[in-house]
Length: 171
Ligand SMILES: Cc1cc2nc3c(=O)[nH]c(=O)nc-3n(C[C@H](O)[C@H](O)[C@H](O)COP(=O)(O)O)c2cc1C
Image 1 (cartoon, rainbow, N blue to C red):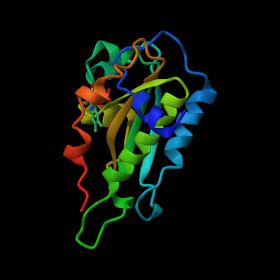
Image 2 (cartoon, rainbow, N blue to C red):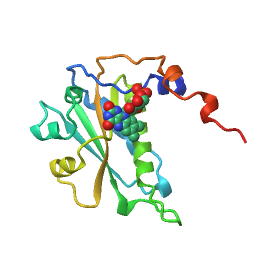
Image 3 (cartoon, protein in one colour):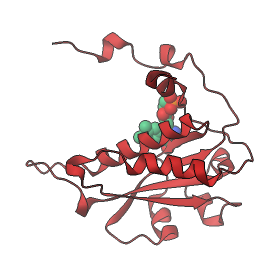
Image 4 (tube, rainbow, N blue to C red):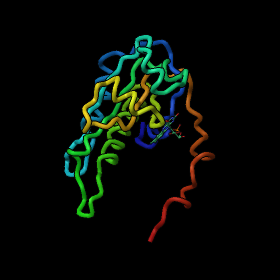
């Protein structure tokens, strides 16, 4: 499969099968995050793996969507703003680094036949308390992970994405 085919195959899976993820596949996904590039190679991230065995009640307050609790694993991608690279004008690159790691993981998951969904619309304070995160560690992205119960809408890149000419500017 070409890289572009893989990128097209990845989609936001909002429904999962009752099927555990073998450790080997989980490790494959996490390793793809670990090897991601980051500004100045500072790697200001931590990946918390939460196994959703019936979801501890607290997680219901994190993101109250039924499909979220179908996923056997949540990966909480956290950033350490005190450990990230800042440009001369002060711009903090932490969130950029975390997004790259997350994208590596979603693509690795798709490669392994797994589904993911980025979730940023979650209750941050609840995650901080559930994971007992220290003050300098911020949860930024949750990836739900599991075998998807749906298939991708392969047309969406034609109808739900801006066109090539709208987003590419040759100068
Ligand atoms: C930074 C970011 C945050 C997102 N947050 C959520 C979210 O909180 N809940 C959700 O259902 N989808 C979320 N998504 C998924 C997007 O809605 C989805 O990627 C977009 O609609 C394109 O669809 P596709 O991923 O199936 O190609 C998020 C995606 C990104 C990149």
